[in-house]
Length: 391
Image 1 (cartoon, rainbow, N blue to C red):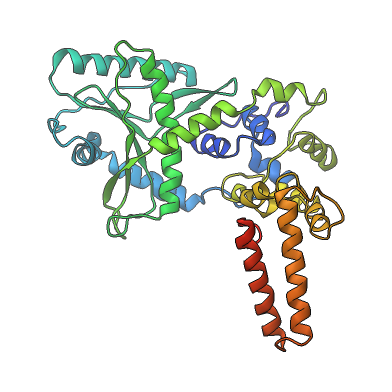
Image 2 (tube, one colour):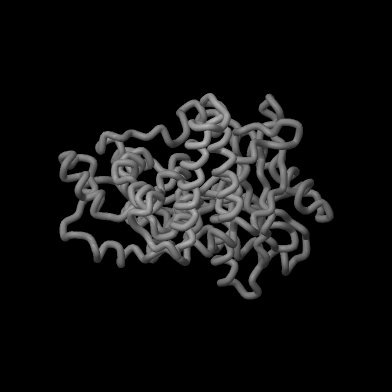
């Protein structure tokens, strides 16, 4: 599906978190499952996206990660000990296993063997030795397709429990970071926690995968590392639930026309037809998570879909799926009057018309007064209907 001689793009934890946030989007599911480079695809469709990190940000992030892991990960383990396990023995002589192996399958098997050995050694000897796995490889089944994930680090504690470590280059100012960026990092870490839980389930006894991950960032405006423990139980539960709702890749592929291909090398018309053959579920949140967001937004707006206004608006409008349907329902031209959404729209339209007529007639004069009267009427209708859409 991605075309002959086109290298597959690996599905990482960031992409999985975005996919889980929008499980109803068959387009993203099939493209990610087939390993299609969505950035190149968006460019070929004439809607290039600015989604992703700049080369400068990548270079800065790699340099900061190297600093955090220098000297055998001494600083990183100190932060884990300080924020997550202060009662354990200090990580003076940590074990840094070699995780090298050919191919992602080989690295995944090597990571699982290393985790098994480190966990059993901690339980059997009781020596309290720490282990640091630098860029381990984990596998997670997503809608019937295996995704290979590479967290920044996984730490095995002296008691045999496991912790995910996320290293980011955005700063922590006075002990706190940008909530939006922390939230994105938590969703990404939750995917790693899910993958680790699958590994732990194959061990007997199964070790604990800690739900509190360590987020390591630069301190203030320096390059010195600082850290914070982030509880990802909520993100883990949401991600697990959404991933189970994803339609299997095979089921989506079976509904596609024979010979469907998403290679960016195809002619524009043929490529557009192939992409449009897969249903999408666009929402404004896609702009921060998907390379195809600009293309899907243009199509959504052209079709007058209410999803372009946001998931909250879409949910409150019920069976009204287009802006044209919404306006027709408000004018009383279509829709079931017993439908709460239709009734609320008609009442809002009626009150707005009455307010504007009053302002234009014997009521308060001037555009400001008309606007104030209209807003007051709409606010009253919204309170009676109890819906955020009318506001």
